[in-house]
Image 1: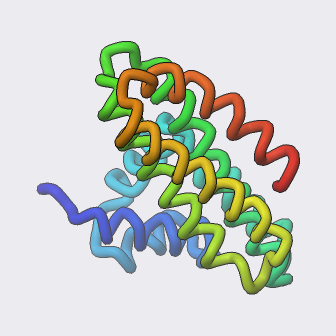
Image 2: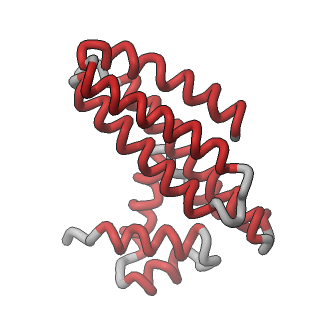
Length: 166
């Protein structure tokens, strides 16, 4: 039986940030413990290590700023993993790659915006990433033949932006 994505998201939230055991979170979501373990392992294989993030929440210990930083760290881990996957996929069409990069940048901007009140230092990074998103859209619209080169440059440059503003 297929479960909606919302169920997976709820399980992850209860386990990672909600302080519930995996077993309790599974019961709260109405799924079996085996399904919960499988989802956790599948997420880990995609670069989303729930146990590492859970440890980060535990270490953060209740400070909203520290929790915000832990959330951003988890997202950045996912962001970097996704960028690596996009970079490695030689079969992905350039226009599709730019669309995915733009979507990833949008997710990043939304995550940063959600944390802006508790992590004001992220606003510079958000602005820098908005500029990168604008550049990707500009190139896609006006210079589509350069999309492959842009995709090759954006990944390492994104890391430089994170070092500078992150």
